[in-house]
Structures are given as structure tokens and as C-alpha cells.
Image (tube, rainbow, N blue to C red; front, side):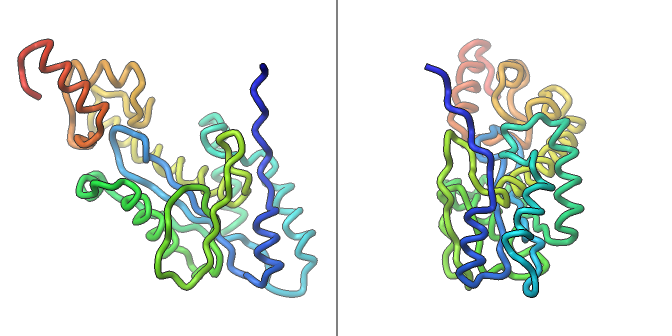
Length: 237
């Protein structure tokens, strides 16, 4: 049976929020949750839709036409993400917030959902204007905030919201830049290629060299590889 095609994201949820009276609408997404190394990065995108005096449906459609290639970042090649990141940043000017939970801080959380929440809150706090409605596609609850937040269900593991998709690209590009820097600082691991995720190359590097300071020692797969390394050579990491 052929796999279902992933949906093209739209501004349907955003337009519904606008129709309900919300005027500062943001989409937020994060990257790095499943990585075995590196920080958590979240981005928030505040949509550049004028408050008054416009045909709102036409304004959303114009932006959708401009962002016609925007998809969830995991479905886009890195070469295209670079171009789309620039396009999104030009479209929304200063309406972007980035939130980062660094490795050392992330290690203090036993519940990674709380670390994800912190990164998301930091991204929203970094926006130039507080949102009154936020769209998310994850399972994070944002408590005690003066805005509505709404989870948008994924279809075929892809978000259906264009603002969330845009945020995912911006977060991914910021995360990738951090990991490229770590690739220079810790050259044995290939972070600039796999961005901290456990590819065969990364697993082999862990078996050979052990961990470096940006690895997540509470990650069960990292612990398993380290246990195998110790069993193979009898030397602790």
C-alpha cells in the first residue's frame, strides 16, 4: 500500500484565530528533542498580518503564496532550508523569537518536556510583541500565560500550520548552526553532518571516543552505547 502524501500546510488555523478576534498570532516549534547531543532550540514566528483595514483572507493568501515551499523542516533538504529561512526572515522582519536551553541546563531536567517548554517560553518572550494566540504541534502545555494556545494535530507526521512550519525551519537552521560550531570544537563526532542525532557514524564515534561535553548522558541510547564500549574494551568512559 502506498504511503499517504503529507499535507501542504495552510493558514486555516491562523485565519480561524483571526476571525475569533486574535491579532498577534504566533507559531512555535522546537528542534533537538530527539538528539543525543546539543541544546534544545525553539523558534516563534509572529505573523506579519496588518491589524486593520485589509482583506484578511487575501492577506493570508498572499503570504501563503510567498511561502508556498514552506513545509515542516524535517521534510526539506538543508540546501532549500537555507533559502526558506532567509525568505521567512525577510517576510516577518523582526517578528522572530529564538529560545535556547543549553546542554548543561538541559541536563538538569529529568523530564525533557519541561526543557522543551522552557525553550518555547524563551522563544515567545523574545518576540517583539507579546502574542495573544500561539499555535503548537507538540504536547507541551504553556501554563499561566495571557494568551490562547492551541495544538494543531499533525497529519502523516507533518504539521498542517504554515506558521508552525516556518518556525520549524527557523529553529532548525539556528540549531544546525550551533551544531556546526560544535563540529569544529569536537571534530571526532561529525556534528556538522548528523547534528547530534544517532546516525551509524555518530554511534561509531561514540564507541571509539566515548562522549564529549555536549552529549546527553541521560539519553538511554547514549548510555547503551557507552555500556557496550566498556564491555568491549574494559575501560570506563
